[in-house]
Length: 230
Image 1 (cartoon, rainbow, N blue to C red):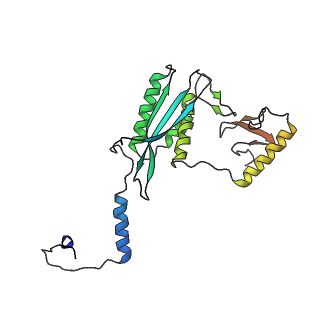
Image 2 (image 1 turned 180 degrees about the vertical axis):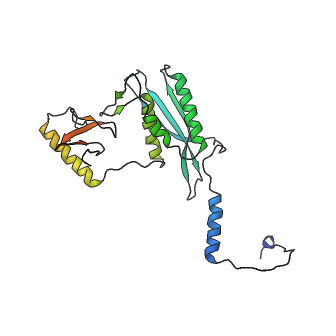
Image 3 (image 1 turned 120 degrees about the vertical axis):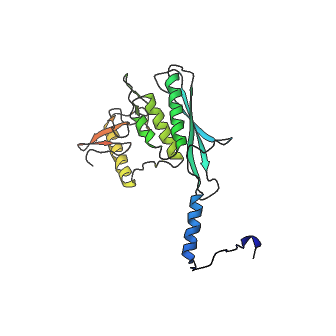
């Protein structure tokens, strides 16, 4: 036996109990869990961080805006490895929004570093409306504001790193949507691009895409499947 494993007991032994195999496993599991690093303010920034950059081009400006989100990897190489957003940078040649963009990046980065559930930021940002009106993206997606589009980009990033689950349309529902779209386009005039939704489609309140059509007396979105008929 290793000498370092020996421990002298100075007090009188009044009782003892042999731990079962399950108790030993539970103790080991609890110890391992206590060593798992979660995101919090005291986690120091590594010398190098991996991230993604998203290009945001709006009809409101001649210059694109570039959103960069850098991630930190916690418990790397273990079963508890986590990828979490750590900081945000936004760059653009357009200086019209400089002040609020700097403020937004600092607030977002602070929330990311604090840890916990930061996914609420997505819905809060997507709900911001520009009083001067929003704009449509190629493909028919409506953006109520530039802040909302940044929110959509952050949502996309959080889905990629596993913090948010991307909503999936059931296979049978997708099949029905495809059939309705084919039937509608067969009756309507040809569209310019096959990837676009029908030009007469209305804006879907759920996914903000101009893809809602009236079929069989029911308003149905060809993008996300939202239907007034349930």
